[in-house]
Length: 362
Ligand code: SAH
Image (cartoon, rainbow, N blue to C red; front, side):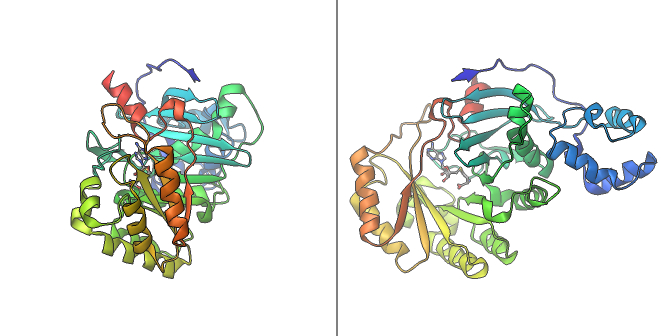
């Protein structure tokens, strides 16, 4: 594992180009006598070529490059800390323009490069085992801040080693800090750009949105009829236990979440994944597995089991290997499709919100 020192540069005073609206950019270009098509050209430089300065944008007139540099920065988020694990997982702590910190992760596998991105600073959902919500929520991320995480993840190798090979991202998982469906408009705006051919070219089928389970928002997402993959964090097979683990369940209840997931499947044809974090001695008993199988009986669903990742200051523990194997076997016996999530970047606190907490606390 390697750690780069904390970068102390102050947050940028001016806006990043991906963080201004397209109307604002169009107006700026017109006011500076530049053609409207420059907007697309700029976006390609930032998203696809990984340009870090306006000067690097060699097919733009010099006067325009100078004017851009006087009004904007290419990216307004800065890498405050960068950790690399032996398995090729990179974790970035990004400093936003207002000084707040967020995390994003790049997971590299044989034929996949997946960015795990955040949608909020902190989280309001308060799941008892999760580091992201321990200090509550500060604010939503803008669509530009969401997009910039993808730019950092994609161009990291290029910026670090001058490696010119195109390292496209193949997948996005919206599983970082925050509740994506509580910031849906900004997320969708960012994902539209990510999906565009002249953006990052990552289609909806390669994008997973993970939610605590907000039924009205799941329905809204379903009505868009996009091919996003939806993952719903269940963590318990009944309301009594789920109320203890996922406080927002008090207001929603499991039944409404499962109905909304069904609706999502009907509208999009995409099977929903249910995530289940296994907390040793809390929700990992054979009875829980049987109840979960009963709950999902007859539904087109897949279960991802996630052994708890330790969080400093929390007393929860991982399930024993035996409990994990038994839980999985019970679900299988009842005909439920199930996998255990592979652990990536364990060395670098890859569970969401952990690195930020460690830095904020230090
Ligand atoms: N708010 C979204 C995204 C959260 S992060 C949601 O609730 O789905 C993605 C997944 O990681 C969620 O299932 C979340 O419950 C899980 N997670 C959070 N902290 C964890 C930890 N310490 N160990 C294991 N999984 C964790």
